[in-house]
Length: 143
Image (cartoon, one colour):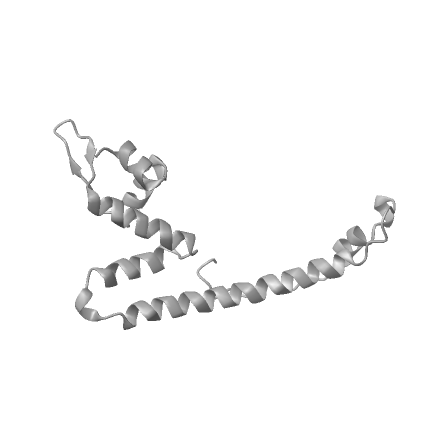
């Protein structure tokens, strides 16, 4: 099948397919004499795998690791579990960051006295007065 057909079957864009090829997540397809890409069922399966990993917010690095492990079935799934455990730790860290963000937003929102003029708005005053700490280095794949 050609790239447009693959895009339809996999429910993604042609640009996404080309990007995944460039990132070496999707193997290079065969070419026709006219230099058109020709994809097979293995490309559909790999593309679905990549898209499902992305739906789980996995980084390209994590996907590369899983694909390497999938291509070495004799290794067992312990290393695959390790990739997932690390990703779960990233998710836990992000949840904590989001809970902290929610607390900050809630504290600002509670400063609102409704229907005040903008120059008397507790939220705007809070944003001006708020002390922000330097962002700590994030240890997640989100950067």
